[in-house]
Image 1 (cartoon, rainbow, N blue to C red):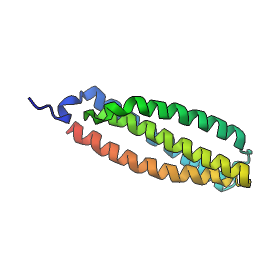
Image 2: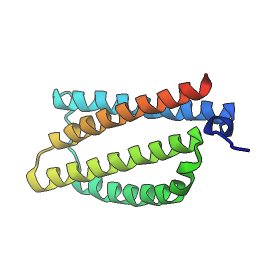
Image 3: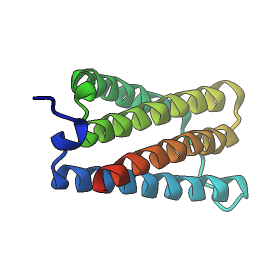
Image 4: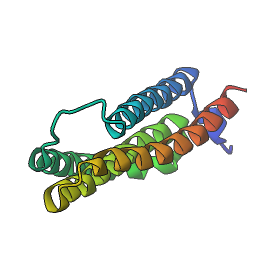
Length: 141
């Protein structure tokens, strides 16, 4: 008997995927709004490039480990596994953007790099969330 991906997905797993996508989208929107405020000069707190760099490197290592653990399960056809992998991949993109921004802050003194990197990654994550929403709603039909 052939099992289709749709048969693998329990309704609770589909709703968990939806919750994951919504939380990812919510965090992305909040970070984008904060980045725009920084670019508009409404946030005058100094950016600590060294701290950004150290924490983002640690986060990247943890997220790469998470991806390595999840990756073999990603081909199972389960929407919740795809959702978990998308969530970890978004965290990896975010970690890399923070590393780039930290280098720009430390090497060039360009604090706006933090906001610009946040906005670029936010667009990528937003588009990825749209794909994840489509997958979830296909499974719910």
